[in-house]
Length: 249
Image (cartoon, rainbow, N blue to C red; front, side, top):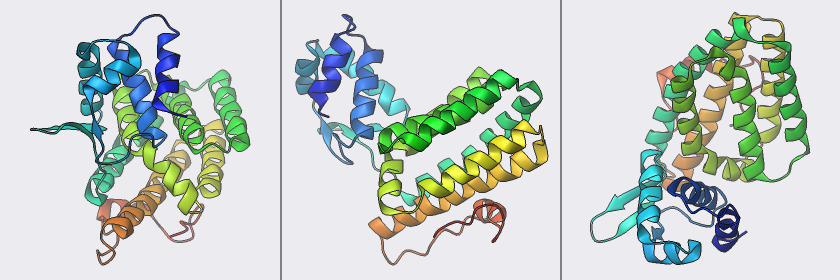
């Protein structure tokens, strides 16, 4: 897939808005069409979409707010790089927000909500596309959190997912990540079906913590091979050996 393909998808809507352009650029970053540190030239992007620079600039500002793009003097917009420290902080925030959302949602979960989550898991089993897998991963978690009826909380959680989703593709390719994650998804769904808030919260904590440890160690190895591995007391607290599905790192 190329940026021209994503641009064509936007243009088929017959309306070139900043939101649509931002979505196409977001997908381009997730697919690796734009890589870390790459300059995003507004003129070239505007030409691809057949628009002026104004909606492109607005779209890039949206991505800046999501942490995917940063602006630099004399260099313009560039795709951001995720540091091990930033990844660790994001996952620590996810722990707090997502466990809160789940605890609020469990009493409100309906059979339809649970069926939707189960269907998403089934679809996830059948996909081999890392980007699609990342999208389904978010859809599964959103299906369990949405009944909390906290739209602002859900929006914050989604933004944090967007910040790390582009690295899931690398995790799936470089680590035995997918199978372990799916097992924990099934365990989480089972606890929600039983309306066991304590068990569900513990599983979610371990799920996020294990994924965080894998991601941070992966980034540390790629960026600074001699850097000490993850030492966050917040994340280590929920990573109890032998509990639920073991981390593969």
